[in-house]
Structures are given as C-alpha cells and as structure tokens.
Amino acid sequence: MILFLYASILAASFALVTCFGEAIGTGKWMVHNIEDLPDNEQYMFRPKCRRNKLNRTHDCFRCELDLEFDIDNSYGGSYIIKDFVFDYSELEKTGVYGMFLAMTYVTNRTTENRLGGLKMNLEFDRFGSDDD
Image (cartoon, rainbow, N blue to C red; front, top):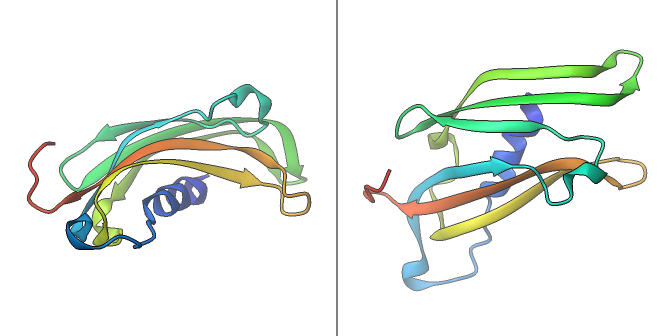
C-alpha cells in the first residue's frame, strides 16, 4: 500500500516536456488533494486517503484499505498507513508549470482490468511562489 501511494505521487507528478518558453522551468510539486476515483463503487480496491500539510516541503498521508478479497494465501484484509511522510524535494525539479489532474490505477497483471486507484490534483509551481 505504501508503494502504491508513493508510486501514485511519482506517476502523477511526471509531465511530458512538450511545451517551450515560459511554460517550462524549475519549480516544485505539490499535491493539493487526493480523493476517490469517479464511480469508485465499481472497484474492488478502494483506498481512502487524506493529506495533511506538515510544512513547505513535506506532506503527511494517511490511507485505509479494506480488501473484500484475498490476493493470495498471505495477503488480504484491512491495511492502514499512518503518518506516511512525503518529501517533495525527491520529485523532478524541472517540468511544465500548471495544475494537473491524475488518476492512478491498480490493474490485474493478467487481465489488465482496473481494480481501483486514486484521483489527485497536483501543481507544478515556480520556485519562489509564496502561495502556500
């Protein structure tokens, strides 16, 4: 579950650099919110996550997941991630400025069916912007 949350933030912060000029530069990433996917009831994997801001460079995430199925003989049941501290300085420092909506999914490797995931709103902002 921690790996999924970490991978979701990393994947959501990845932006293809296809623009030019003032739209690209150095800056910082920030997750503004994390929420359920649209039509979340249809998925088996439905984590409930929330973000708490610690300071300008770190956020703390808490996620809860109740699985209604066993993955194999050793996994399944309830999981809770408490106080997962994420350091935004670990993310890429060059990107396209703007607000982004990202939906990350857990998929079945064999069938490629979506099992669930998260929806995030992120922003890549110039260094020195003082709006948080």
